[in-house]
Image (tube, rainbow, N blue to C red; front, side):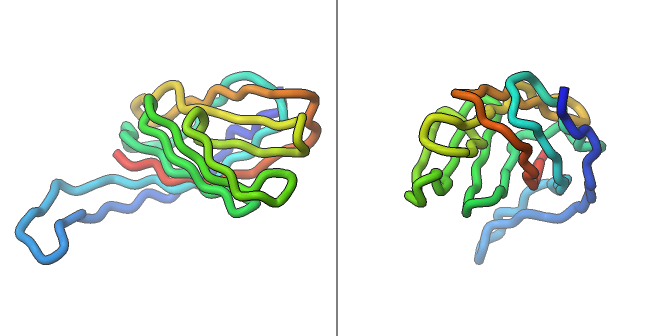
Length: 136
């Protein structure tokens, strides 16, 4: 399977707090990384060592970004025709053209990783590199 399992992950710790208030939260762990995927269906486990993510945010080419909490998924991106589109059924989506594309949802948030399930429509060819922030 054409999956790159290596992540360039950097862990940082910080405090989230309400602006202009005394509403302080516990320290939040963030892992940032990058992964690659061939255009094929299947599952992919992404390491985020040191945390159990609650949310994952994605940044990808064509002006795309998305997020998931493992149940709710959302993405906005430019489709193959150059039109900005949104989806609430996937957190990652890439259009090769109008009838060939790949998309993913977060199907598991686990200690030290999250899992993506990829679906393919048509016969897209190529690979894709995405960046993420996992927050736990």
